[in-house]
Length: 404
Picture 1 (cartoon, rainbow, N blue to C red):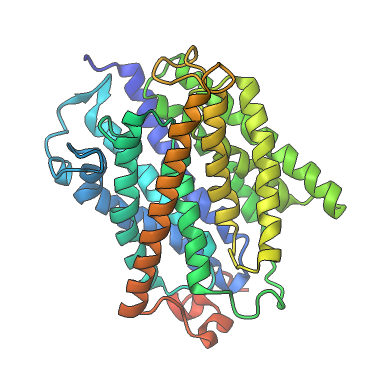
Picture 2 (spheres, rainbow, N blue to C red; picture 1 turned 30 degrees about the horizontal axis):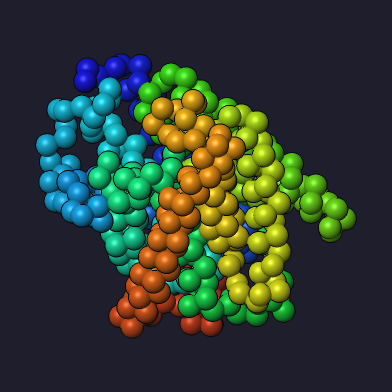
């Protein structure tokens, strides 16, 4: 198939947009921690940009999109991106597709860091994300997105990463929170966000970058990309509005952190569905994501686990919800590569959607648990209590975020 310059231009622009999301995530998370941990939290995202980019070129892309072995994992044919620089993949250069997918691989382990912010050793974090990306992200991406992946062949729909990115990261985040335990003093001591203006700035960058995340996944610059872009925006808006209203009704005041969280919840919820559902359905998905993720975040206080920055409550729960609702609202008339869902007369689409949720959730949980235990035995997961009280900026990095 001949390379289309318009499709290529859009994919390259989308790659830059998705790259920008990782610094956006750094600000989103960084504003929510205490001042003494801001740099350590920012480092989680920027270190992932460095480490996982190299891993992706070396072996990650090949494991995710190389020749399939039983639908479970790719081969070694693309190690070092061998042989793709001068060939096409559909209407875009193969190397552009690999670069676009790299940005998804980068941000996914960085999402997990929200669960253990303010208490994990930086060295342990680096080893963990390298292993997790290789043993969890790359195989799951192959299952869902590779043409011979077993979930792809089953018919599971995931347009831009509801299961591959958000569910896998969110479930892994929950396991991390449980294995590492609560922050020192939590919940009796207040762990107040130190800079919500930073968090809101990060939210805006994430919203902006998400257009590349979802609309770029069309791999064309035509009507499908336009649909995904509009669905993405509407779901984000609906998610922010829903969280705002529910929080206002329950707690008496609408908060800036609540609106930011609702926007991200809407973005997470629409991610698997963005190229398969009508705009009205995107609004419904966003509204439901805002309400359900709010309930999940509030419930952690009752369930007594410390998911520091709500990585599971927003990404895990939002990804799961989005995957299910994709099976409800998908319409093949909107995307020939998709399938009809429940509303279009095909309740059977829920079967592969649920199969994907269960398979990815269980696999991510089990492998994450094993990796955490391994890393803990090798170098230790958690900083000493004295370091935690002093702050990770000073003890882990020898720096301070604010010289005031």
